[in-house]
Amino acid sequence: MATPKSEKSGSPSPPTRFAVALFPGFQALDVFGPLDILNLLSKKTPLSLRILAATLDPVSTRTDTTGHTTSQAVVPTHAFADGVDDVEVLLVPGGFGTRSPENIRETVEFVRAAYPNLRFLLTVCTGSAVAAMAGVLDGRRATSNKRAWAWATAQGPKVQWVPHARWVTDGNIWTSSGITAGIDMMYAFVADQFGEDVAQELADAAEYVRNTDPGVDPFAAEAENGVAK
Amino acid sequence: MATPKSEKSGSPSPPTRFAVALFPGFQALDVFGPLDILNLLSKKTPLSLRILAATLDPVSTRTDTTGHTTSQAVVPTHAFADGVDDVEVLLVPGGFGTRSPENIRETVEFVRAAYPNLRFLLTVCTGSAVAAMAGVLDGRRATSNKRAWAWATAQGPKVQWVPHARWVTDGNIWTSSGITAGIDMMYAFVADQFGEDVAQELADAAEYVRNTDPGVDPFAAEAENGVAK
Image 1 (tube, helix red, strand yellow):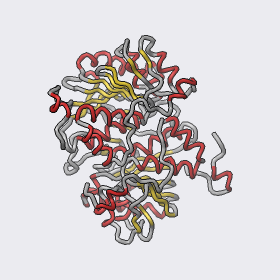
Image 2 (cartoon, helix red, strand yellow):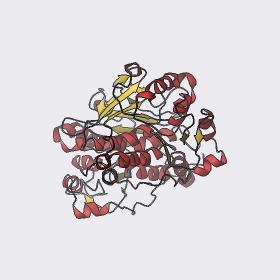
Image 3 (cartoon, one colour):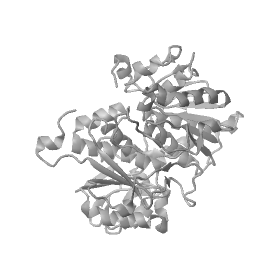
Image 4 (cartoon, chains in turn orange, green):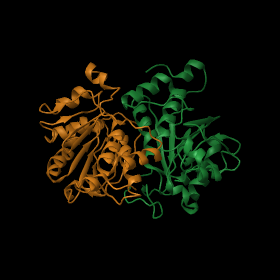
């Protein structure tokens, strides 16, 4: 593996301690698109990953109100009450479970409490609505799912929402558009922190054709037209 | 939702009963790329999904030999011993866990036993090596992960392996190339069974730019050059 970008430039070492915050009704691919990249990266660079949720019970991709008839359940490794400890990067997915205030309340409170101790916050899809509810996006540029645009942006009236973007970076906060945009964002994050050669090698291994330009967003018109999800 | 293709043509109804076969060391995105599509489809068309494994214990994406330091664990809904009952479509993922004969033995035996009762068998990545070990690909055209090509194809000397393909369809068996190729294959399967308009609507909702041509494979050269994974 090539020398990480951060070593070349003298900036801090790339992060190795990751976490993801799950809630009932999370979107599966919002989580497993980015985490599959981390899993492959972890074969070359030792990383850690906490899978956090309100309790240690398995967390399903559906709830009684999400409307799905198929689902999968993932096992947390830690509860929100354990905190983020020395976690450097927190990933917050979206999903239809974000639409129920009571369902998402503990996740919002966790993100609000965790943010000051993080090096980076990454959100996928309506995960940015969760971060907005937590108040951590106030005054920041951010994007979100394009079909849920009207709802998502209403969760953060003080956020500078960017409708035309595959993903947006503002300081230490990275937010992506809907579902699969999280894959492109995570490759970009790996490129930024571990080096472009590392990111491209992982994408080639996954046989994935990246969108490497955050300004290329074929789905922006749906946000601009206000199409409802 | 538009009238399903199969109703238009008078062919059998599209399948609604799906299953996935998990084993320790499965590749997360091989599973959740296709299943995220099914989850969204299930909001419009009621579907069922069995998550099968050797036991009902959570199944991790890593084993002691896969070399990962991060992982996720998924909860099965049924054991292999329960059989496929009335399942119509079985999805078999790949992953580094396929490389250990003892680790994959029960999954191979399950696929061999289940196949005669299925309407469709779908594999992603080195899932085709598992199907080849089970003998169900003998005499069929199939593809696999391009970096694992030499190993994967050696698991099925009687298979007609196709190195240049994003995915391959031969009768009721669909096989895809590495990891993210499973996403394109599943959209193609949904298009074939439920209609192109349904597949495109789901891809738009996921903000995904599909590869709709199985002959477009930017990663074929890796198989042809024999690059080792």
